Length: 303
Image: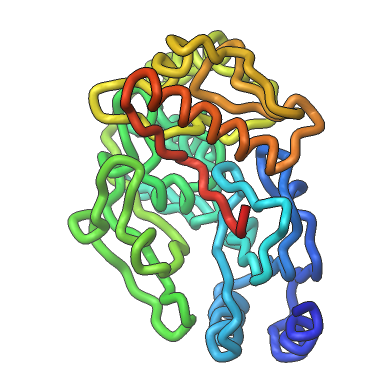
């Protein structure tokens, strides 16, 4: 397979490309296997040409943002990982509208909104990752979700042939879901519609959320945030805690003693440790409460 990607490199636009790339270094869980090829396009044109080459070759690929919600299996991923990164990190404010490239960190976008006296994004100030990933997952916190502030999204088709935009009504938002999860098309930017507010009040609200997060979440440990989706009528963390699983370990992976909804890497976890712990938690919760927990984390490759 590597020989196939070496040949592909000859067709690819110049850019940041790494063969046989250790994806643990590119994810917030700091664990996982290798991808046959990592590509970090340095411009929209490079992204367009990269997708065209991959599509023409028939080789599989997966697009990611900053890697805060993915785990590559220890066996690796035989395709290419296309990372939407720093080249897509611009942020612009005009009136109540804020536009951001898909690679812009959510925290930086929330800070830019605060500095411009725009309210509505405070809930997202502590969400790890990029705007593209947050929109893709319809990320949320403290009772709010991205769907409440997104006005439109810029996309490129998965074959690189078409650039287009969709309004919020056409994005298929639901809990931790958007239509891009179904189409495979890639988010390149998002336009948000916020409200005028007082910068100091907005800053205070962000500080309050940060204090809550620091007190209740394992922010100093490698994790992917909340590991499981919230099951209807329940909270994943409470179900896990009620099963007595706080602090449970498998290898270097642990259910956080601080918040049972988080699986953390104690420093030496493999992807298999994390996946095995996930399955153990799922089975235990189902056996006791007949509730099926679904991972919020995207697991890439064959476990």
